[in-house]
Image (cartoon, rainbow, N blue to C red; front, side, top):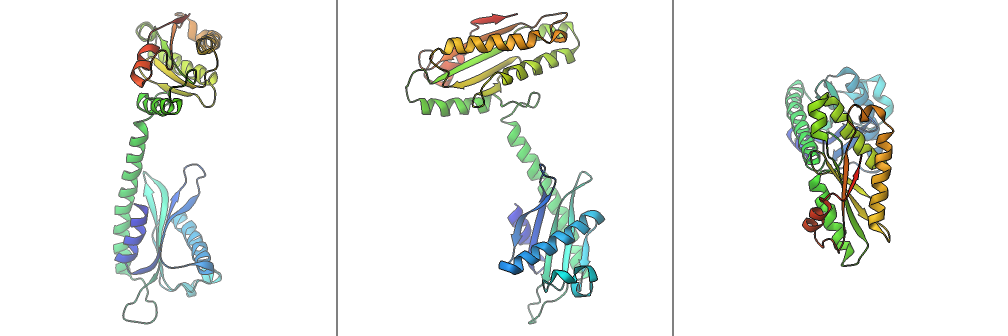
Length: 301
């Protein structure tokens, strides 16, 4: 989509160069996501520096900018790009600037030298930018939707769909070898009772703290997922020579962590049940392993 955004803008408005910047949500910096044009080497570096400088001004102004004669602008003479004319606009979404789109050098097909962008070009460019803003917002929405298909919004953990794919991957790696894969399931057995008897927020805290306790006592390469309203499953590659003891130790450490939080244990103590399955003796496919792990074997109060 970003490649199409720059190429379409350049073709519609007869620009030699088009640069799209989008804000990185991690660094909060506006980075180039797409460039359309034939600039290379030193000229490309100067063009990108010019775009960075103009983008800063446009983000500050929050308005599109039309420059017909860049050489006449004292603040931009030092850029030394030879660019004559430019159009740059901020891309906004929900009151924030999420990026910029810049067009540089108006192509004049009937001349041997560059033309200049006009007021009519600015009008068309502004309309194009409004369409682009919607397209980017829709793309981000669909990206979040795809992510949410694999993650639980309440806990931030992967969900059952994601876990299922990871189990299949680990089964393929296991290739029939014993002791290389286990699956543990933790159920907050009295979650419904907590919700009915207490403030629902208390039940939500209990659920989140259970997830955090599990995460704290799993290894970095284990996969923890929420697979039901009150159930969490942990995929345990290479659980060691005694997988059952490995899961029992996990259950004990999680229970100890939660028991230290007195506010969660009053007036109703949390009730945890753990089940587990070991490949291949408890199952050699995803369905059979999950079914075996669903059966509670360890209870912690």
